[in-house]
Structures are given as C-alpha cells and as structure tokens.
Image (cartoon, rainbow, N blue to C red):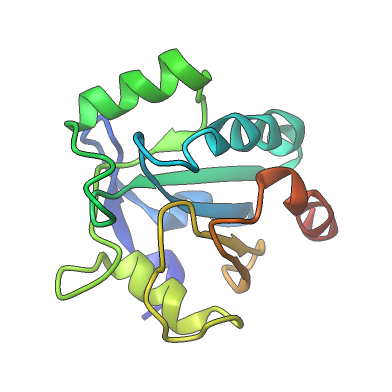
Length: 157
C-alpha cells in the first residue's frame, strides 16, 4: 500500500486522500476528548501555528477505543476541539486504530514506523512523524509532549 493512496474523511464528512498532503511534513495523531492527555491539543495547536507556514500539517484522528474517552459525534468532537483548544489543524472522522476495523492509515503507520513496528496503538495521543516523501520517520508514545517534537519537526522542514 502506498501512503499517498490512502483515503479518509474529514470530521466535516468530506472524502479526502492523503495525497492532498504530498510534499508536506505530517504529524498524525489519534486523539480523544476525555483523556488525561487531551490537554496535548494545546501543544499540538502551538506546533501547527509555529510550523504550518513552513509546510507542516497535523492530522487528528479521534478514536473511542481506549476506555471510551471520545464518545461524542464528529460534530461534538469538532466543537470541543475548537472551543476548548482553538484547534485549527485538520481533524478527521472518528476511526478505529486497532483491531479488525483498524483504519488503513493506521495499519500503514504501524507497519512502517521504525519504533514499535507492527505493535498496536497503546493509548490516545500516539504520534507519527512523516517526512515530505511519505516515510514514517518516528513514532512517539502518548507521554511525549508536543513541545518535545520541535527538534524532529525542524529537521524535516
């Protein structure tokens, strides 16, 4: 499977291809609105504000698979992110990141990440850094704060 052939849908319900982000540095994150790591939205938004003009995008994928910490509808999730954290980066429809219904994007990320290759997503707010050519460069666990990614992002920009 080619990274740029993967299709998904925005939180607003628009079909989109990952190829729309070709040539950009990406940070792909599985998110949740009612998690101890939810305040990371603030740090993610800061990264987006700082590096967006240089060709950096964050793609947020809500997931309710971890203790049902994102039970809302796509509209509720979108409003929560905007009202509480001012999220302006693209959020996508709620998906599964593990199991038999795992979204193809996360299947690709898991299979191609240099860290924990082939291992399931452990929790909300795991992050994958993708270079401008669609290569998975790094996988970060939930504990890694967005501010700790600056050096790695700058190196790819």
